[in-house]
Length: 140
Image 1 (cartoon, rainbow, N blue to C red):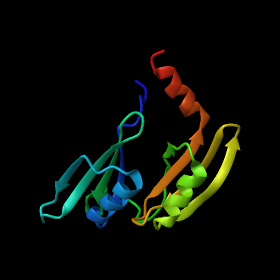
Image 2: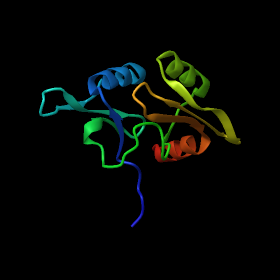
Image 3: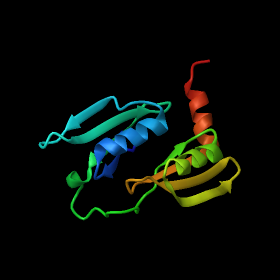
């Protein structure tokens, strides 16, 4: 058994409606699925984005697993972007804060990360390997 690709990335927010609106503005797409909690407030919003329609879920922080940190930490998932500097500029202008500056990692690989206004780390990168895999997956 091996990992075949991520299914859903979960981000936590105290105000799911505000986080969903922020991500809708950044991604230029509305959440395709939402679910209210027992109190009627939005508890979950899910977006499908990117070349493979990856899922980004925004979940009410009260549903987080026991022991989950209340701020940035842990693993960083990097999303490929074609314009890393432009993406970082846009994220920062929308209220995100720099977590990792634009950092060259070798030919064709450059990373950066921000903390969104809800405390989640969002990694972005230019990844030549991603583009090569994407190109090889398309029919000739």
